[in-house]
Length: 166
Image (cartoon, rainbow, N blue to C red):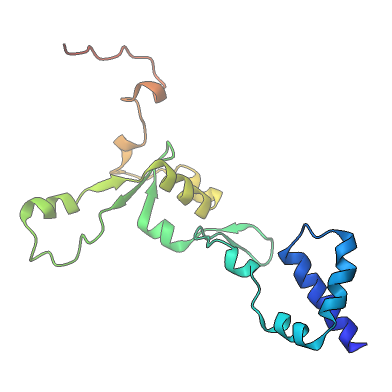
């Protein structure tokens, strides 16, 4: 009876590896699997499916009580979302070895840079809807960057396009 259970377990394992096995060949396969030499070989081999699963690095956490998405703290600390959906961040290494770096580079480190569209989309998936809503701050230093009136396709207020230089 024990041998039959292990044979069924191995058959299930084989079904996971080769989904296109026909029903007529399963009986033949189970007769081969019931031999102890072949059976021990199947049980000691690692699962092939687990090796083929690609790694996913977009971390999405869920709360235990309600099952809602939770924001990732590192995203909310390191990035800032603008009202039009873009994200900005500081340049990496802006506080490291400043005594080595020239004044031009130190000035560049004080600036913020925009994230690309794919990075912005990924960051949107990593935060909940609270962080996607616009926040209003007194004397917000990022106020000019919250609107995209200078860009023709996202302009809300009608204004004539600036004249082209020939």
